Length: 208
Ligand SMILES: Cc1cc2nc3c(=O)[nH]c(=O)nc-3n(C[C@H](O)[C@H](O)[C@H](O)COP(=O)(O)O)c2cc1C
Image 1: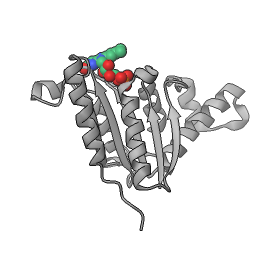
Image 2: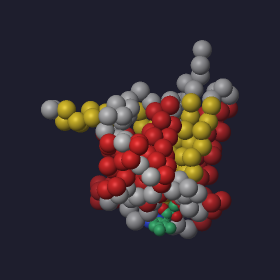
Image 3: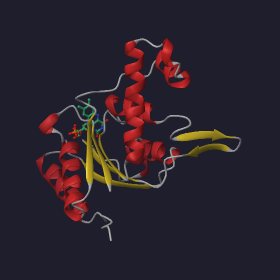
């Protein structure tokens, strides 16, 4: 079993989503000690934003005409896609920032959504090419969004991640959520306890 562990919070040891991803990976390893973990810290080394130049480099791959920086960018994009496709399970630390995900995580998504590798367009619409793997989103947010329809309507973090993963063909998406972490110590403590219980209940497929 290959597990890709991704963190994107820039808050280091103060980060809730980092705490959750670490607990999820620990639980997974406890259940399946043979799990091989690859770690990617998107806050420590954020991929650059997409540019027109980068998109041309990835599309045409005319290696002999590329300068060193362009080669490095192409190599990084390929490494991120390879890493994603090599994983049986992907654990994504996802803080909510301004109703969506941090720019570091968006930059990773912009690299791994690659035509011909993780999706392709057909005459009947897009087809995901990355199905068959599991994604666990460790969601941390200051307020609450998993309640009323009004609240869920402004969640562009979990809903967005589900949409992106669905687009690349992944339907097995679980969310471990700590929400309301900015609503006072009591609400925060309860949110972390609930997330901890959900992690304990995570179904880890144990190899035969
Ligand atoms: C720049 C920034 C933007 C934020 N935007 C939101 C938001 O839109 N909604 C919300 O509920 N919490 C928001 N928060 C609170 C975070 O979601 C919360 O602190 C969460 O724990 C962040 O994850 P982390 O602890 O892993 O960094 C924001 C925090 C920061 C620093």
